[in-house]
Image (cartoon, rainbow, N blue to C red):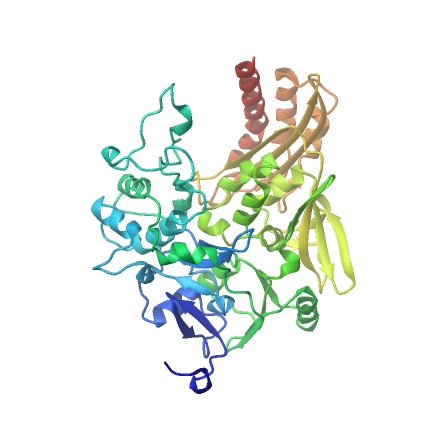
Length: 509
C-alpha cells in the first residue's frame, strides 16, 4: 500500500462504489450523471434530464436522525457533481457483478423486471435504497412468502394487520420508493413482484453494515471552472458573507429546480452557493406554539421527522413529485423559486405559515400570505435567504390537500388546494384555504374563507362558498390546463371536501 506521504493530493473527490475519484478539473455546471459517465460508470442513463424518469438514479450516504447512515436515492441528472464533494455514492455497478448479483438485481432478473434495460439501473438503485431502509422488514408478516411468488397475500378478517395495502408489500416495501422511476416496455407488475420478493439483507452485506457508521461530513468546498464557481460554505455566517459578496448568486439546495434550468435551458451562473448541508438550515423543532422546519431539510427528511404531527403536510408529501425528488427537494427551495405551481405553498398558506428570512442583520419573519409579490417574485431582499418556515399551533382539525395533475404522482399540478378548517358544534369558526396554479402567485382564497366563517358546515353553505371559490384567482390557459378547467376545479374542490367529511362522519356514526 502506498503511504499517505507519497499519495497524490486530491483536493476535491467523491467516493464511488468504495473508490475515491477526483473531481479536480470538473466544471461546476457538470451534473453528477455526466461526471459518472465520464468515469466509465455508464449504468446510470439520461432519459429526461429533469428528474421525471429515474433512469439516472444513484444512492448517496445521508445522515439519519441518529448517528448512522441511510442510503438515499437521488436523481444524478440534477445534482451538480461539485455538490457531492467529499460524499459517498453507490451506482448500479457497485451493487453487484454478473457472477455475484445483488439481491435486488437477482429478483429483477428472475422475475422479468427488465426488458430493454435502459431504465433498469435506475430502478435497481431506487429499489436498493428502499431495501436498506431502516424498519422495512420490522413489521409482522414482513418476510415474503415464496409460495406467493412476490404477490401480496389476500387480506383476511382474522389478520388485517399483516395484510399489505396496495402500495406496500408483505415485506414492508413501499412502492412510493419507485414513484420516480418510469418503465416504457416491461410493465410494472414484474418490477413490483421483484420488490415484494426481497427479504432482509444478509449479515455480511457491506452496504447494510455501512448503515451503522456515520456518513461523510459535509465539508466546505470551492470549485472553480470555465462556466463559474460552486462554493459550499461551512456555516450560515459564511453563506451570508458569500451572498453579500455575490448578490446574484444562485442558492442551490436539492437542485431539483436549478438542475432543470442547467439541463433543459442551458442556464449557467457565475456563482452558485450550496446551502443544502448548512447545519443552521437543517433543524426541526416542535414547540408548544410553533413548529419550525429548516429550509434545507429535504421533504423526505421533514416527513420522517414530523411523523404525522402535521396531517395536512402528511397529505401533501406523497403528491409532491416523487420520492426521488423529495429526497432532494426542500421547502426553502420550493418557496425560494416563487413559482405559482409549487405544491408546498397552498398547504403552508392554509397552515398560516411564516417564512424566516436570514441576513447579516439577523432574522425577520414574513407571513407566507405576504411573501409572494408577483410571478416568481417575493419580498426577499438582496443578501437574504430562507432559513426556516414556522407553522403556528394548534392546528386546525379538518384538513385536506387536493392536487389536480395529469398523473397521480411525479407530475406538476394544474391546480392545488390546501384546506384547514375548524368546525365547532357544526359551525365553521375558522377557514384557511391556499391555492396554487390559479394566479401569478400562490394565494389565499380570502373570499371563500369569509363565505364559510361563522356559518354552518352544511351542504347549502358549502354550495354557496363553492360558487365563490370558482371566482378566486385569475386562471389562464396553458399546456397543463385551460382557464375554464381550472375554474371548474376550484368550484368542485370545496364540494369534494364536504363530501369526504360527510362520508367520514357517516362512517364514524
